[in-house]
Image (cartoon, rainbow, N blue to C red; front, side, top):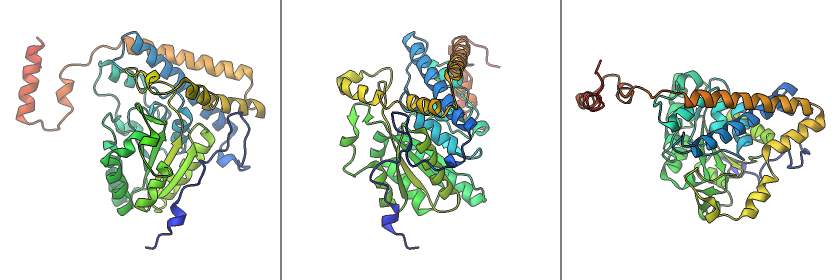
Length: 363
């Protein structure tokens, strides 16, 4: 098969339809098939995840969570791309994709229980088509490719969408996954949320490529660049990439340009490596504010609607907080009972010893 390299190059500038001031440019008349109800839904989900993310930070500061990786500022990329996925498509998240998993229906409290240490099982991946969150950097990309290839061999037309940060593109697993996906024509879309910093290391120190999206051409796959603070552009670009992958046109690499408004995690001090002026600049590009302005200008939402959405998000956050804080610790035996269908003798012995050490009755 002959591949035209020029056709794989991403645009010089990220795709954007919705500007920070709420004005639009280049939007098609059909709005990519999105109805007024859909547009409100996109906005609502961004508001929801920001409120829940703020809740999680507060819980960590109160000693209720061990740590938290905030997604504040990245809501548009996460919500927009999640909305572009089919119901049977699978998400392979890293540790910051709270907005993606929220759209997919994963109970937010299950994430809090993980970081609180009261539950190890999280959620059933097959119920939501969401793989377990990956703390190791980039290892899950290979899982996404293998899953997609297996689905293709079964004749299933699902697509896997794997998320990673810009720092993860320096890991060997990233390159191996892209090469594997391209060579085997796996229907996988890789999403790099370029939030400008891998902990304290800026993107400029991660690569000499013109952009992260340009890395796709080295593997013979389509590269995309999108304004990750524009939920409409994020949706449109992801819909195209996912559609191409589903129709057999190969995997794709999306680079979503955004900014992490909070420290890397609650254990990080970002004042040591980035200037306050950068935060102020990106605050003016806030993804929720620009969508809100546009919807108000269109008359799709009014002030009463905004208040209702905010109140609903607040009520949801309070309910999630109550459930998380009141969660009882999971049984100790869960550490062992969900590892193997037929556990080896060594694990059985460890389980017995752990139960005995905890002073519990082994049933």
